[in-house]
Image 1 (tube, rainbow, N blue to C red):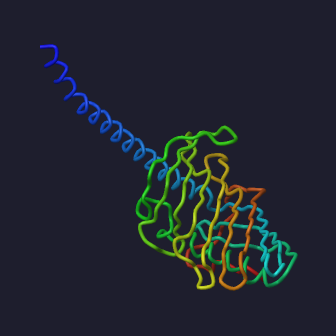
Image 2 (cartoon, one colour):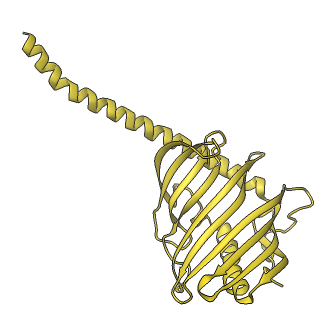
Length: 247
């Protein structure tokens, strides 16, 4: 009788384990879905919170192979309808870097900012929950692995880190899945944010671009002096010109 009882337990035990694992996977899936839903809601509010805001930007760019570099200081503004413009406050360095590297980057940002096909949403990406982590500055984050559903210029394969308390992005990194230019072989980047008054404020972007002709191009961007929206800011209306990047 005892042996028969143990045999029954031995047969049932794997089923219990499988059931427990399935329940755990369902719980993880459910939790990650809830996190994504909260992230999407927070991102929508974040987008509205930044419209009409402005900040200072410093862009350091270099072409090591040519030993050329340049530094641009500009005022970055976001209109009430979400269009990004730059007012140049100063530049030092090589004009090739200014016109061929920095200008092209800013133009690409303007084009992609309002394109919903490039937004980090379940429509464009597969989200895989990697777990909860603690950053070096003791922030709790949810980590998701991102895989684009289509090979489209502007989409990337990499990671998204969300702040556990606000569900806003703190960090993004990855590689573009499709080159934005025939001269580029691959584009890697890291993008960091800081949470201020319920909005994810850009802090820095570091990008390395492998080109086919001039080798690697390095772009380091830092943001500062964030000015929140006011009634006097962002008077640009829908359909108006996005502004001039360089004058």
